[in-house]
Image (tube, rainbow, N blue to C red; front, side, top):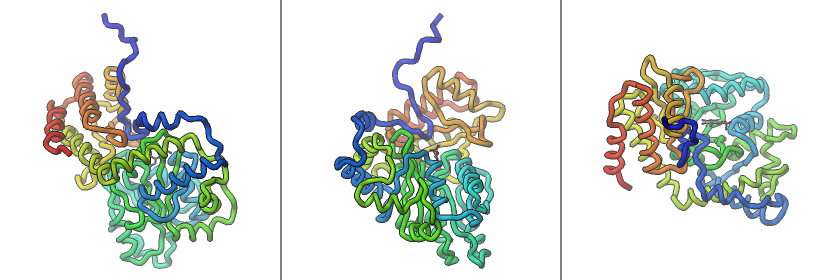
Length: 394
Ligand SMILES: *Cc1c(COP(=O)(O)O)cnc(C)c1O
């Protein structure tokens, strides 16, 4: 009898849609002694990082780095811009959109919610129609999630900007780019995004621990009107101190070493090649899923996410059982269904430090796991992905 309690050897495959795999180079960079965060070396490091981040967000304005998760960065954006009682408009694309909306309500904002079924992206026309009716311009902000990680859906941010401009509405556009930055094309300045919210653990290939707000001058001015009190999240104080490379409180300086290296890696590859790689690997993944006959949670092929694929488990089967089988037998973690998708959906993360053979191993693990878990599917997904990859070589 084989001993089932023997630990797995070889790599653990972390194919959840974030935290993503941290490359060796980044891990090594973080294994350095702690820096004096008021010393000369740190100022140089943080100025280089802040400059690099601007290039990734594609903005000339201000990027704020917090020691926080993405949730903290969500809250930061809202408390800097709005006061309790202010009205914002938010759009339901999935679990993360719901969490952000709930947070906004908890801090006292009045959230108008455009409901949807978690199977399609933001409908810009619906936003335009709502704004058109807001003749007194009560709506102060619009909150959308660029890549909805729970449902594998990427929304058209530019279309939302155009919709706002079309009706000449002054509301600020706030976009969650937590799982799109560093995976999917995003142009903050060109798309007129007033505040982009991000975190370190997805496309930026870092461990969790850093949250980001990237804001333009319009957002900064609005925050100056609102935020009369000092707080941990307050942008203005941080922007002023960042000019010299320092922070008002202790930054997560150990993570800065890692972020510096992950930015190096991103610029070595180039943002265009990076998004093209994500597109190619995600497309190969989807070819496999189609061959298996599994249904994609995202209904519109134009909105398929290049960082995550969310798949619906066939009726009468449980996605969490499948994930447990794959973890136990093949030492691979896949993403669970979140919120109302629990047990109904499993998610394949294909973002960050990821390549062809990692994709093929991931798909093999899924195909073998489905066989073991007796999920009804058509064989040949892995073969179909091989063909896609070799037909679409770089
Ligand atoms: C991961 C993620 C977040 C951030 O969540 P934290 O757990 O607080 O870091 C926010 N939005 C989206 C779309 C995400 O994928």
